[in-house]
Image (cartoon, rainbow, N blue to C red; front, side, top):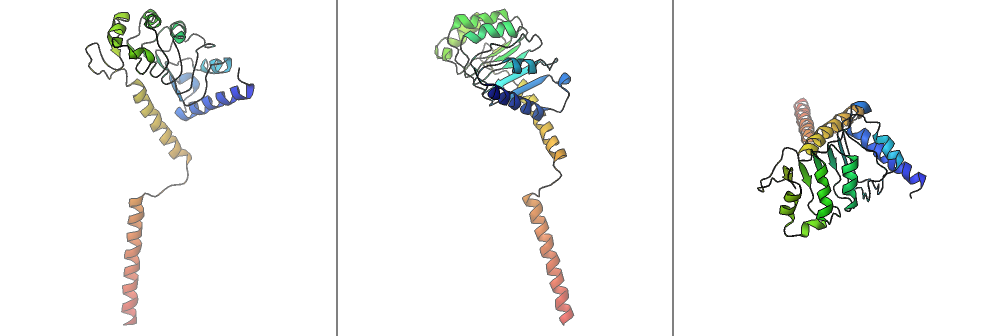
Amino acid sequence: MKGSSQKNKILEQIQKQRRSQSRQNDSKINFLHFQGIQIQEFNKEIDDYLKTFPNLQQLGFQRCKIESLNNLSEYKNINTLNLEENVLDDGCLKMIVQKFPSLTFLNLKKNQIKEFNEIEQLKQLDQLTHLFLDKNPVCEDENFTSKIWDLLPKLKALDGKDKKGKVIKEKTETYEDDEEDEDEDEEEADDDDDDSFSISDDEEDEEYSEEEESESESNKKKKKVKK
């Protein structure tokens, strides 16, 4: 178990990333996506914090070295879950079914999923239509794609493609679109908070050219005066 100071540090990082994503009141937030926080395992503090967002529908913990989903409560309102690039094994699949029953989109890329019979549990997610599993050990099976489609016939997209192999963008862009919006919010926030300003190279060139012209005209006048 991590010490209390480490737990507090992790929670502080989560809160900091949340503040950078939006200035909206917690009750209005429906999207949260955290990256690069070394969580490893969830604790009550993190779970309690997530509960303060009653309208949360999209949740992501990417590259957070998460090993387990223990200690998380059930989140019935969340329909999009991104757990890409962690160290989750087959045991997480049962947890996902239990704790996130309303999922339509699930990203488990770059984890440690190995068994098809465990993946079959996702069939219990009646609304699941988009699933990402690429770069897991289970993908090494030469019949991986066909087996997944057989196990989960309700899917509309597997690793961003439909059953015929055609690329599908509609749902996989969920995070990209929201992240673009959040980036715009952050840029606006930075502009509002920063009283200073920077000058681009082009602007600097323009200023220098204006100064040079001014100096040139001044020199010409001086020469005329001397004459």
